[in-house]
Image 1: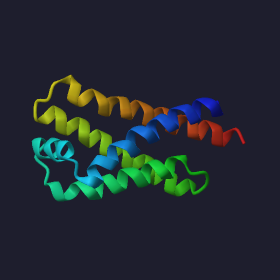
Image 2: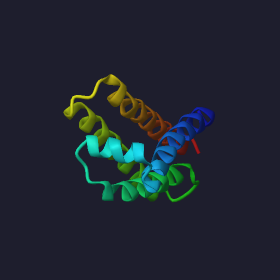
Image 3: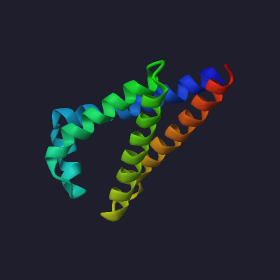
Length: 119
């Protein structure tokens, strides 16, 4: 159970953490996607930092309350990304990645609580 937890959690942390870096750096592609979705570019660094901190929080041992907040933030971010892509009429290539992220988030969260109860 612990091995499954760490595999899913590391995949989630990589997805979220690595998607935050272009936001922090305001990479032109990230700015273009954000603009396409109708959001102001000044939010990019804020969301990018939140993503990186959330990714760190879910892999860092301890601080269970912080981990809960990180899972919630990641969930809100991914639901918002899914909704935004669907709302602007993007094809599945735009809204499937947030769904994959949500599946990883739910899997990691479920396994986190399973492994915590097994102590």
